[in-house]
Length: 411
Image 1 (cartoon, rainbow, N blue to C red):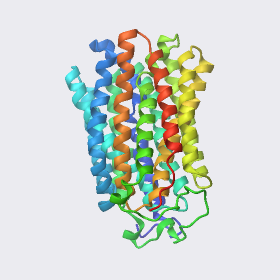
Image 2: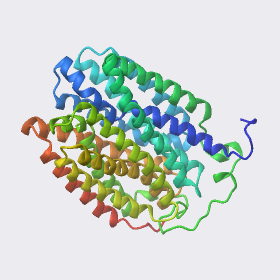
Image 3: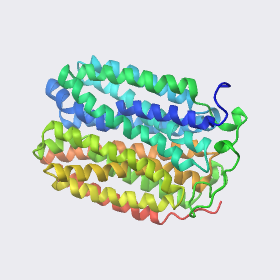
Image 4: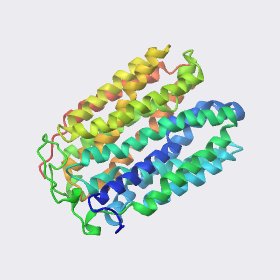
């Protein structure tokens, strides 16, 4: 640590490690699991509801863990949670590579989703907020860039490995990436906060900045007990739950829906890559914009764009319409992931950011559990996703209305 050039603020190394973990965590993403749905269902005869049930079970259990992880991150830092989560994902992927029955799939993928939603997502998202104020937006954007970059690379790579060998080899490959790119850098580089190393936030002690009313440094640190008594906390929380339900209702079912619409499997997987490229650019853009304008306004726009993207998806039966949906949905996913922790920090400060985001993530994870399962039930009963996607678009609009009413609290 002492041999690093003084001009490089250590917070950027922490961000790099968190971004690497986010990249490798693509192994747990619904956008990656959707590539496995068809080959695994064909081999074992599973229906869509059975597959979606594993994602929902893991998400619900991860939601129960997330608030405790958030509190632990505030007290002890993100390193332990990130490394533990990464190793669980490695073990889960290796187990999935040898899966022979639905019960085994449930055990392994449930563990992977618990690690994702209960440990990795909570810890990685708040690292930038702990180390940065003036550059919080761009630092958070870089961490979320890892999320999008992982899917950009892994979706076509998984499809390639499945085509060349089989789906079991693809799970082994994902385990290796998590170990090398995710767990090891987190172990070596992540630290709790700048004060622990005798540093100041942003590396120079200048943490104030002129922004919109919900800017990154708008509020002092506030205790969790005070936070949960403010109406804005609950309005934001419910809005995040609703929009998570809406966006997650698409992910697992995207490739099956597009192939049902007449696209090839290769074209459907390519849409995931387009979505991820769009998300990568959006993560950086949203981070930079949040330093100069209201994160709440940007988040409301992301919610509404999510509703519009679902409307596009309902009629998408050719490549231009499919890629238009992918671009819009990429902006939505990355925008929400980037802007939510920035908004929380701007409203309530960084002292309890882990605790706040742990509760926030739990609400989102419950939404992640409801969305895929609801879409699966509609499909299994009607043979179409159209009704599900229309309802999810309406849910996203309701979420935007709630967020608009969440004024900056006086605390």
